[in-house]
Image (cartoon, each protein chain N blue to C red):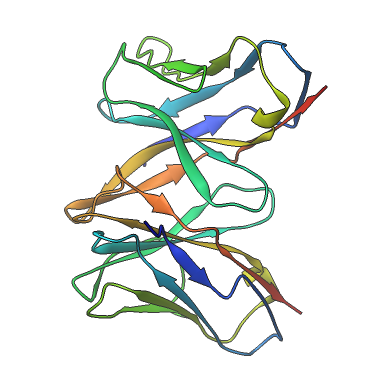
Length: 113
Length: 114
């Protein structure tokens, strides 16, 4: 049974560029949440998608946006990249918007130069 | 808002040593509490949880007791192994618009040497 799949695993972008990260949730899950984990820090909640809509949002600027598709997969988009956006981006899937049954992917390591 | 505070790391122990990683929480009410583990190059995995005060969560030899008197949820293991080397995160749920997400501590890196 496939767990959460994230792509790509690593990415290098230049300041000012835009990036799209992708996540396929665990089979049977309908909710996708995204977290940013800066080096040496704990993950911070970015937003959650359920029924193709953003349902919750953490303290992140509008440069961070997302999408959820009918098959529950999701994308995270970041515009106008800053050096401070360099981090590990984690996707967590769950059922019915709860955080109690999270399954995490291995993440996408984004480096902004 | 609700949050957790985790002890600073890193922690280096010899194999078979006793482990304690401290976690304290600030919350209104008594939320569930979690410990997650992140092995090198991997995402986070739920290690254990406790859903109410005085509960003890346990898994893979690790234990943590939800203590409301001291607002703590310290992680312990009696005899660590090299394979326990990882980063450990304490977490609690934050509720927002009818759903929840997790607030994580800063993490404690554990290295176990043979």
